[in-house]
Image (cartoon, rainbow, N blue to C red; front, side):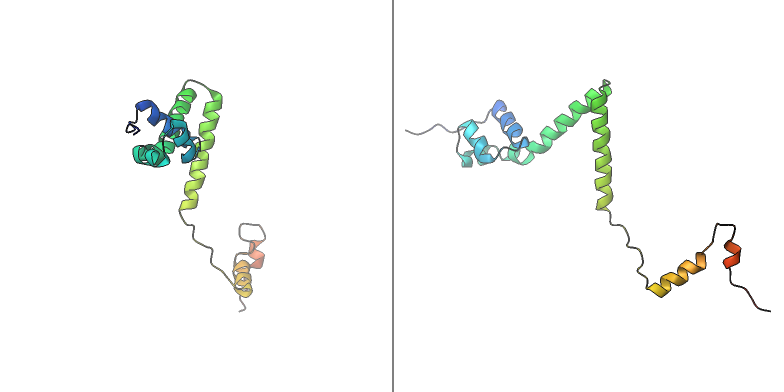
Length: 130
């Protein structure tokens, strides 16, 4: 007996996206749809590849709408997420390393600016001999 060819439906595509977004392994997704793993990968490649991003976008829009409607928990969650994203972005751009100095060079530089901005700063300036 030959099995009929699998035809994805809108409902099955949504199920694959949701299951993938929730971390289900492909073997379990295929079993839930009662299809072979190769069939899953052939007919649902787009959902497997992009499902996580699409579901996250959907959740973010729902969260944003709840925040706009006055849900304080949603507002706090969005604030935390955007703060985290900003922090992650700062790690993406490399920061210049401070110049490495030897002990003597660092001591000379520290001595040159010692007392600046204080009332006794003038006492530390080099004296000229006439």
